[in-house]
Image (cartoon, rainbow, N blue to C red; front, side, top):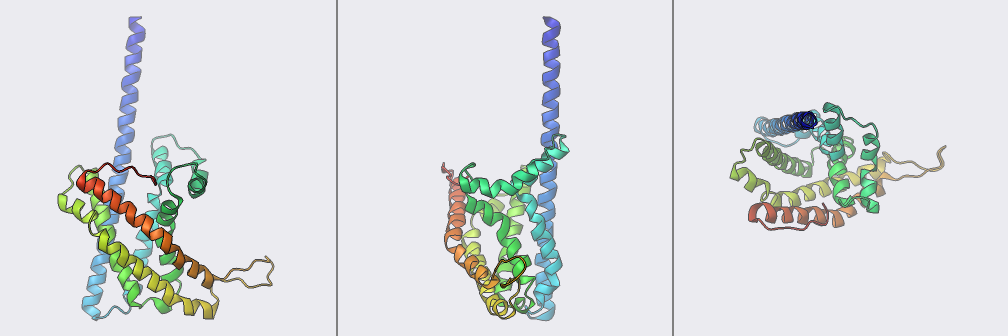
Length: 269
């Protein structure tokens, strides 16, 4: 009996040690990721300021930072929770191949109610900025000098520096109050400004898209499918009407919880 109890104690200690190792690896990865993203957006901010000081104009600014912007904004896909889970499983020796399928079905699960997370929140967080970078500003050079592009770039940069700094200091257990304050107050102004910049940029792209027919498919074709990117962009613009309030009020609820200690029952999370 005594021997069996000792074996059980040893196994329990080994399991606890493994859990601590896994937790340490995951924390190390998240800390590295958030430090890297903070640094990346700081580099973007400095590049934008330097360009404007040297040129005295915003024209050409987007092209000068496009490569860095595309890298760091696209790399943010790592934040999709299922990808973080895949990485954690991989580094801890518990990788499950079918998690890749889970990523593809994540939004669908939200839509049909399998998980409680809102399909709106999940879909917007995964897709919106990638769409703006790759399928609007990067694809249509004629709009890259629009003031609206600079508006959402400035908003994104301030937002991401604040957000990643918040996550970094929180992981390090040394969170300055002004970082927490900035995280849950600046968005009140920055989010609406960012949305205005994005909508004005899409609107500026509409004439060019209609004239050139880019990304559109006309009938007849061998696939027997018709797609009009012009009307797709209009639908995207209209989608901001239901999407933005949900994201904005979600952040307001988080603000009350974090800054004022209110207990919030989240329907979206």
